[in-house]
Image 1 (spheres, helix red, strand yellow):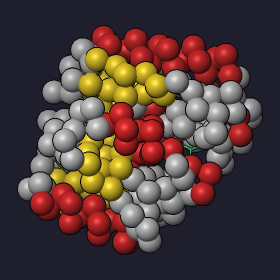
Image 2 (cartoon, protein in one colour):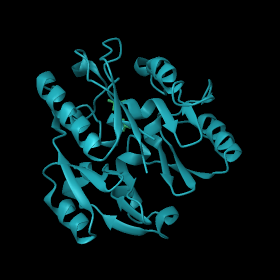
Image 3 (cartoon, helix red, strand yellow):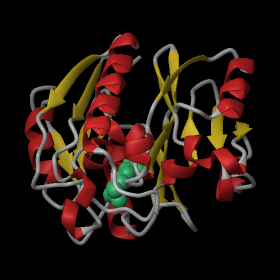
Length: 253
Ligand code: CIR
């Protein structure tokens, strides 16, 4: 069970973040509203939420998931693979100190972003992407081993981060799309395939008793209800414009 979440409000420079989506400029007020609904949903999932103030130095800083890997016994701050986000992890490190006695970190020349890390029970999958390199992955593997976790790397073909294309929903169930539909590493799980037109919703998020999904993805919603999940839908349009999914907006532990 998760008890805590850390989130950060989108900042005024949000529209200047990295985007490949071609969906247009995000509406800042709408982004703030969508973010506040996201926080409400986390509270409904029984989390105590630490909400950090906006940080206009970093347009992408609302996507806090990329700044750290957080587990019960340890936390690791990451090292961004893209220049404009380097430094986002510094304040997060400070905040994590209030929850953890020791903090680990990924260091140069290693790069690694939280969106590339997926935990499935006692095992961690580490996506090798344009943001996470072999050295970063190896540093994390060594840390995980010390804490008793196994890990394997997954080279990515198309997606930004590993969790853009695959999400763990608990009970050995994975949501998959695109390159992960027939991926040998994930065949052993129960797979829910997200249809091509709903690919954005692959990045959904299990939080305690609920699964948070982006609003408007009717087929996925139906699929999840068939699996007896309790679903909360959230408007994510403004974050999608900036390549961000649902999980990216929080650290949960
Ligand atoms: C970026 O490109 O870094 C941001 N615009 C989006 C980050 C999304 N984070 C994630 O998938 N974990």
